[in-house]
Length: 476
Image (cartoon, rainbow, N blue to C red; front, side, top):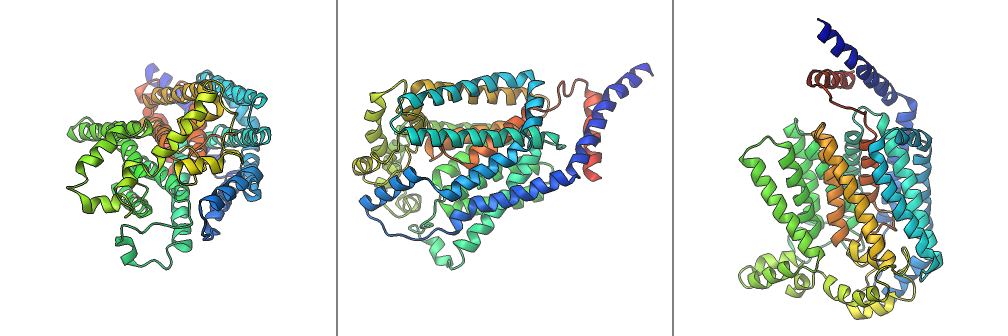
């Protein structure tokens, strides 16, 4: 009797906590912030809706890219500032919560060290104005993710899972925007053509939320298989239509690894883990030059010519062997890295107005980024900056694994998102100095997860009573 009474006393404050959290989700503050985030996301997608077709040669494309980088974009600045304002409204509460969580201190110290080093590069940067502007974007982004993650989403019932639900909605909105703005006049025969792809559109802006939405659907609808299958089918089909080959493999790798952690020990779990590991090793190979991938492509070229036409988007074998032009681009960039290997050319300052045309001539195409986040980081802040960034990211992933021992869905969801970011970062156009949805999604979920309740799941019966309280709040 006394034991049961003690357990009830221990669980009572937590059940009351879930009631308070539920009240927040019914508050006007929660509803208005959700509406603001929805409007902000639509505004974030607006440049994609308004994209226009412009025929450019190599010189004009390089000059246009250089000018856009030098002058910036007013609408992008408004979007960044509005995101920081949304997060800033909850920043005071976020800072109070973070001070009480010792497990958050290590990632925060490493993040602070990275910011200090990025700021220090202003003293030797190649372009002071560009470095200051890019550093300002990063600081505003961090204000937004800290405030929303540790201040807003930490008050919801499921914290990081609530973010996953909102990201899933965001991926559906991106699909609607894609259908209305790009696929209205599309014919079925176009989809069957290996040469078809979306023109005049940065498909990565669509691919990123779709990839994160797939991982979200996998975790959120774990016990509702019909919903899970419907969501995964829709998101997967659109991702296939966008022909993001590297991003498809990346999403598959993270999805399979996440699935292996959520599934009970069985043959299926082992199969998912092995396949996920194989896809992950492929991403590591692509990030380090793609030597194994290019060898396999050369070996299979003659026996699978029809399949290769789709994989190369109808542009020939050289497309795969050059990794869509990444190999000549990286060869052109390495000499710039050797000029300042440890300190870099300045945070976000490498791609300045004076470099675009020369590099585009060497690579034979206009590249606004290095298409490899690790090389991009070394060009900007050197090896020191890359080490500090990776230390912060891996420390955060280790913290997620500790949470996953107590809450598998939330812990492995955020771990999967951080791993997905690393894979996309290593082979895509993501930069820490720019405003990208993978950075926002990953860091917001990270801070929401790490500000969860202390000493969660101490006793099995207590944990069961707490989760029951959570479900009762949901049905209310």
